[in-house]
Image (cartoon, rainbow, N blue to C red; front, side, top):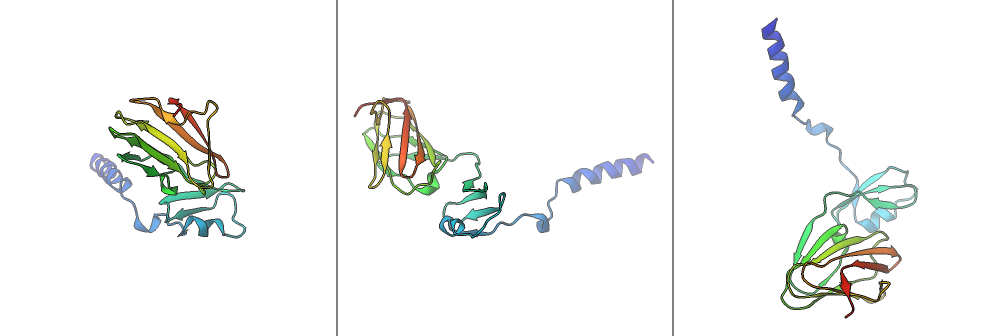
Length: 167
């Protein structure tokens, strides 16, 4: 009886850790633009946007990105945000001042955090058709170790908050 019990426990531990390839979930995929053209999606539907490398779920009204652990993107020069930067952390490691351009066309809820990790300050600038707002009209990191958040709050409108100073 003891041998049978030991064998059962031993085999259960090893079979539990294995994943059957046939049970892996595959999602329909296409560009985010293609996903947004799906007619009559049902709340809870999921799809993979292969241009953004992100999973989206339909909330009954909009396709929303399923959040994962953010990626950290190390930068040393001027940079323009793109869809694939959504929910990322940008670190600017430059001894000279740089510009982060916020373009039009990013989705509602798009957000990034940025950090100045060297002496070069980061100026946040609006690209063509975009509007970047801050209550105190501050759009430049205040200095070493400054942190800033950028969020798309409505179509082509982005709010900036954090450790900022005037240009």
